Length: 81
Length: 417
Image 1 (cartoon, chains in turn green, red):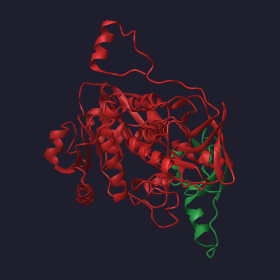
Image 2: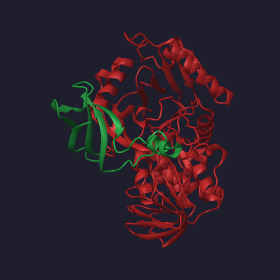
Image 3: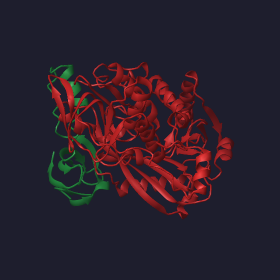
């Protein structure tokens, strides 16, 4: 898999570190235990297109929001976080 | 259905092996069952077997999208052990190991269980202390555990490079009752035993929807029509989220890949199961002679069932550090399973927010050794609508209550477990 970094161009996946689902939103501080439980633990975990965080950790170290397919590993959108 | 015996093998040998019948019956779906189990892997088939054997529930169908035992059941490294630290895991896996020890008699099928020992190597004082603690925790629960020194490791597995430059071996934690059981035989053993007890095993029958009315399960919609059921159990590993999404709820599971590899066949080289403590690597030798080995997760969510080269390279490098002789070998095959990783790497065997819907899921990378006890506890939970003491801690809402079972202490990140 190659990830097209908006700063460095297409680079091999070994240069990147995954940081999970980017679709979950951190709730407001006073949102309560239920909201934080869902934020930390519950995942949609789709077999298909998903939004996720990647860091170009062995490159420019930028955080990226990547739209990737979890079955084909195809990437259709990458933007700086 | 055939009964296997030494005499039968001898007699069939004289008749050119023409008298064997299929080990289990392929069924067509009926419109209604008492219980439908989704997933024809080890856990689903074991659930069906124990429902019939221990709870007298025989009106059961196991529906499988593809072929029996072709998912994670056929994609692991066949290791069986119960060397856990936390009491909930410790007791559960020991129950599983005891079921493994009597499995061939229970099923009437040779699963080729081999208690050749599982040896976890350690390489520094801190690791030795942690392994000693785990060994003591096991012994407090009546599980066998031995701390062996360098000479002990050399005697058990002489091919290990004890003095390798970076990670010299100090010793290991040994569970002699651990070992391996070829996974295909396990799937077929449970299929045969379940089928013998009247359970319908339906292949090529994919579940496309869960029928839910007023918060209770009414059955499943499949590619071969609707099947009504009073109770439904999910045993679908990495695809659990896909099914719970059909019922309208999310679960704390992320699907990740775990790879395994097998080398060309060799004469006996590795007598027990060995794990390397300075990296993620484990190895054993199959009865056919191939070395079977694997490592950690691939690092990002995937349903691909094919591994990345990055992790393959790490596994080979770690293996060659532990046993330099492996450098001369060729890998014959590699494969990847889709793991239902949970935030604490411990499972869910429980009821769900939908009445009558149960699951055995979240087995992370440890599902194979759990096969009999997973089915045993899942069957108990389905039959009585309440968990057994052994799986009472394996609930979906344990994180909400602050009762995570984080064996590794990796925090709520499924991909780091």
